[in-house]
Length: 517
Image 1 (cartoon, helix red, strand yellow):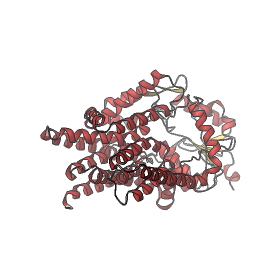
Image 2 (cartoon, helix red, strand yellow; image 1 turned 135 degrees about the horizontal axis):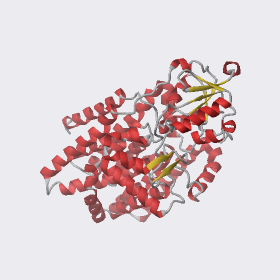
Image 3 (tube, helix red, strand yellow; image 1 turned 135 degrees about the vertical axis):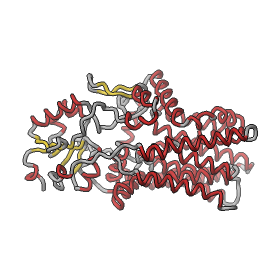
Image 4 (cartoon, helix red, strand yellow; image 1 turned 60 degrees about the vertical axis):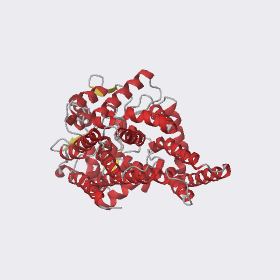
């Protein structure tokens, strides 16, 4: 097998990594901060955290492996190491995807390389990387599992099944939405079992071995968080019973059917705008899969239902893309013999469009870094108990050894500051901004998509709350909030005896240096 065709792919992976590295200085998003902080809670016991509420309830989740990797990366290499991890996972995703469709699905190597370029430049994948999430690690494991199980039966089939079961059972501990990929694993595995035409006892042994390995893996990974299992079960019960339906985190429970459909339409239109070449041929892929592999199409419908029931927002939508990539590849393979010239130009357009709106766009028009003045930070010595309303201060607080505490929403601080800030010694304030909607700046590049996203989720300054057009997920951060809310907050903090730094970004309690131990 010639190595020459792989040189462009290696260059593309290197270029994508380079673009992410040179543009890794930006103000952190909520997702990035929360994931790293969840990892900090998982690595060691913490009495104060931005994820520990005033009543002492910790948000440390069962899915601790992914956050823990981010936290360890921060401890070993700082913030830049954290931000390179998802980019590396994206490259691994493209590599394992290529292995799967070449070795298992028997696609031509040249065509498979082009499909791998598409994976490397999908805007939704690149967005996950830029927001420093764990999704791409789960995607890499997904395609590695498919590479292991989507093979003809031979003497190593059971060994590959053991490896795939171990990886599949551990993936929800990286990120819980990984369970949406289980129907795909089962559909492909059962398809291979059916094609092998083996005896019924052999089927039973395979199912027993895979189930036992998965059960043991889950049991081992539950040991470190066994004390939290009852609380997490109560949270899941409240979530699906609709108790959390008013929460703006993408909960699908308790939402009307009309709102759910409207949110799905907004999400579908948004993704179609970002990846039109990818979406255009999907109907052909649906038809091909229905005719050739209806079990896989059924698995997609099951995964879609799981997403709808739990709130199908942008980053949960990522976990439908392995199914959609399967459909995309099948569609291209069906069209290629009929219109080869059109397909070549189509794939060139798909890769070029994705590269420009993915790595290049985020590299040169990314969220700018918003540093906090070092002179103000020097006023807060190590050990200061700080409530930060600005995610830009998170890594700074970690480096200066502040005790970062849970921060409520600005409206809650305005309503009841004495209760929420009774233990804190300083408050880091965000800059003045006319819009509470942080998603506006992340989608400015996409023209008409900007107004679409703003209509999907917007802040009502008059009522002091967010209103959503469908359950598309958490679209805001607390970096920015309106001038009137900020003025009320400054007034309340002044009444409580807080004084402000020269730039007005940090509010300090009186005698702070005397209170720090």
